[in-house]
Amino acid sequence: MRLACYNGLMALPQLTVAPSAAKRVRHHDCWVFKDELTSPTHSLRNGELVELADRHGAFLAYALYSAHSHIAARVVSTEQRRPWDRTLLAERLTTAIARRATLLGTNAKRLVFSEADGLPGLIVDQYADYLVVQSRTAGMETWKDAIVDLLRRLAHPKGILERSDKEFREAEGLPSLTQVLDGTVPERIRIEEDGLQFWVDPYHGQKTGFYLDQRQTRQWVRQRVRSGERVVDVCAYTGAFGIGAASRGAQVVCVEQDEGCLTLAKENAQLNQVEERMGFVAGDAFYWLKAKAESAERFDWVLLDPPSLAKSKADTLKGRQALHHLLVHALGLLAAGGTLALSVCTYHLLGLTEEILRIAAAERGVRLRILAVTMQANDHPWILQMPMTRYLMSWMAQRDG
Image (cartoon, rainbow, N blue to C red; front, top):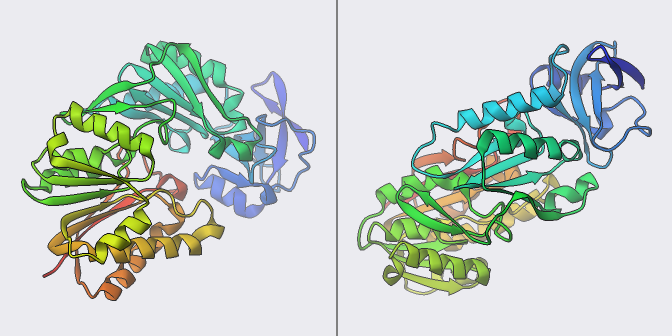
């Protein structure tokens, strides 16, 4: 490892990367893995800014280094004359927020989506007048004070909460943190989406408190559900899908294992004055679906949005088996002409989902017509050269006959 000139003022550690990584970086990927570094790294600090070079010493990019993660370097700039600094950080934040300005019909949105916005490891979600921030990498952790200061100036929130959960931070050698970084943030925040209202628990809720990424799929379902139809919302979380269906006059059952989430779902039903059309079941989706499929009860809509079933590539087989199990029983609940809305948020299963669905349909002896395929909402952009930025897809499958 040698030192490279940085901004004409100081020297940066220069790391040489393998040809495979150099090719990806030149093609706008931003991850370099530990086994792709060919320079010693023992003297580098966790989160330190480094320069990446190919085996011939040619500049590739500026990156933030992680001493603990398998992803050893995350690219923050590929322009040698635009090194990573507060000015570039401010520019990226400004651009990301401006891109979401045209998103209408809601006061809850993702303002920053990590690598997709050139800010690897940083998540910023807006809930009405408040921001929830996740710092998922050692590199972003070193810039947290600057990020908070810039967000205060750019977004003018009443408060900024950090929800840097253990799930993401452990691999980076960082502690789990939940703390108010600026102003005050209430225990509950009320948001609006397409005329509906929801309570969000930013301190304890899954992700940062609400499934913002499902907005477009919720819209698709809500536009097509009809009054009097029977709907089951499995893995309902805080009830957003089910409440949308009930607002159209459907009769809805929400199934959710987490009783805290179920309590919030009931409050959200009351908030939208649809509680009389909704029932709530505290139960495990795997067991509940199996028991119901063996009964005579059938539904016009089965909404299935399970949590991630494979956290790593090594878990793919286990995740595939779990999804197959869920689908066999979910399809058993569909009435003739009914629609399954299946959402998969597991990157390692996205390419396998249609095959898993096909096999489950064959086992049930049903023919499925695909009505639509949706993705994560557009404030969670998918960058083509970074496959990991596409992590959520939904299949709308109607039972023929």
